[in-house]
Amino acid sequence: MKREVAAGILAGVFFFAFLSGLNPLPVLLFSLLAYFLYETGGLRVIRRQLGGGDGQIISNVTFQQIGGQAAAKKELMEALEFMKAGSKAEALGIRPLKGILLVGPPGTGKTLLAKAAATYTDAVFLTAAGSEFIEMYAGVGAQRVRSLFQRARDAARREGRTNAIIFIDEIDVLGGRRGQYQGHMEYDQTLNQLLTEMDGIKTTDGIRILVVGATNREDMLDPALLRPGRFDRVVRVDLPDQEGRLQILQLHTANKPLAPDVDLKQIARETFGFSGAHLESLANEAAILALREDKKQIEQRHFLEAIDKVSLGEKLDRRPQKEELKRVAVHEVGHAVISETLRPGSVAAVTITSRGQALGYMRQVPEDDYYLYTEDQLRGQLRISLGGMAAEEVLLGTRSTGAQGDLEQAINTAKRMVGAGMSHLGIVSLSDLPEIELQAAVREILNEEKAEARRIIAEKKELIADLACELMEKERLEGDELRARLRGGEAVGMAARRETTGVLAS
Ligand code: ATP
Image (cartoon, rainbow, N blue to C red; front, side):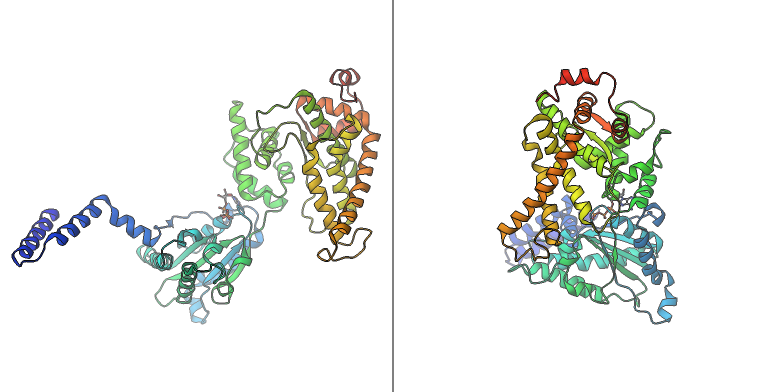
């Protein structure tokens, strides 16, 4: 019906223009364009482009569903108390908290924390990514920022709530230092708009808005964003420690059937450096492996394999030649034996399965939560890194390019040692040290540790050969199997097996 009325009015206007001697063509074209945009929903698309999408999410995440991060949760909850206290805080004249910045590596649960904050304060939750505000066209970013704050107020009013949380992920993209993009004032305008909106946040209109920003590059942010009255609180969201990893694993396996042999504590111990997102993926991969084998329950070995998959990538079909495989086995067992000699119980697994860039690998149970390393520890790391190459030399008589990655790692460690005054040069400034002297000091450290690695390998030559044969057969040795063999000496029939695989041949 509306359409008929609109068509009638339009025909009238058109006829009137014609009688008055005006050219009716522009009116006709404009009307057609408006009709086309209306019919195709184009107007909505344009509005969404300017406004940057709705972004409202219904959040029902609670702080209990976030594993670890005890310090971050506590700090965040304290900061949110003022939102919960509402009128009491106002009566005391407390300035509303306008922004909280969550800083930490990817996948550590920053988005989850922001969602839990919304549930905790009964706030509407709107989310946007910093990159959504960066456009080619001047003014669009600033308009999106304005619109985001407006939508937060509207959504809160619509739902009869007094709190709104706006979560801006990758805030460094939008809040980078002003003036760094020459000839591109768009970034600066967008950031200025965010600062203006944050300055304008007040509780007098009955709705409290809190901006939660997330970044892993705090150093990139414009200092104006961090000054009091804007992002007042900075909450660090670090990689979880062992206890945190255990809690996250418990959360992500709660809905999965676990076999009685599953020991999540062991998994937590072996996943040093994993983020919450890695652990979620690990639990999922373990379930997929169980499904592939048509098992009803997930077993410990599925979890152990999933650790390798998450850290190194999918197993590759690439199958090296037998000779190559022998070299890889000797190399990896070399690393493992030195690791066990220096730190008993440190090997988690050793395998010759190709994954990602690696033809094989030895995974250690990391020493948890070390922030400082002593000279002994660093020298130990060097011996382990060089152990693979030393084993190739001692058992097979030659080196290979397989040690390249180990060497790079070892050179970096040795440079670190020189910088920390642990070389014959004593205390030096790395930046003032001539390259040639640095090289000489690095070489000296590496030669010392390689000689030590060779000594250990030569002492256990037969055992390493046996273990390499066993590894070639089984493809993977768990840390416990390896330790049993290191304690117990030769397995039955080993001498014959050595003969056929020829590991000690050269
Ligand atoms: P990014 O910086 O990459 O945006 P983020 O820090 O915001 O990452 P989230 O998006 O919160 O990380 O986490 C990704 C996923 O990882 C979550 O959906 C969840 O499954 C899992 N996760 C991360 N941290 C935790 C944790 N502490 N407890 C439980 N699960 C977690």
